[in-house]
Length: 135
Image (cartoon, rainbow, N blue to C red; front, side, top):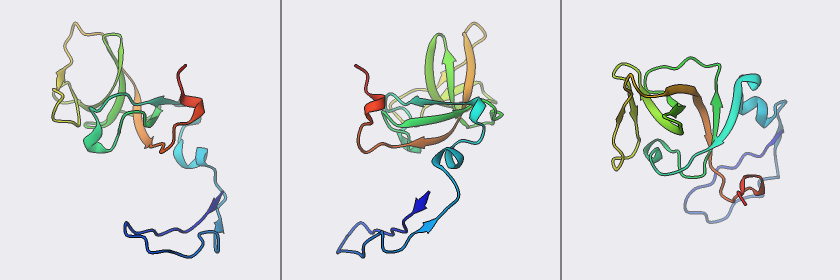
């Protein structure tokens, strides 16, 4: 992978060609983003409930099933037949949103609940990928 050192400011007044100098790194995006390939799946966020922690609608979620769930991890879970992406409060058995417009949800004994994995990375696509378009 070639890494081009770009240090761009919000107020851009022009900068040298980013390809003028680059360095070769011996890694791939798979190696950079995925720690346990055989236990990892990729999903897509839906909705605005995780915006305060930087996960927005249509962001790509890299979910690792090998990682142990810790308090306040971002998880993907099956909650009563629906896949959800939430923060988990393991001490109080709550699913937490990162948006003040969404309430916390208490995981009760009668709920069908299972953690599918921990979100270890999220990626924002600034242009929609044709691979992710639902027709």
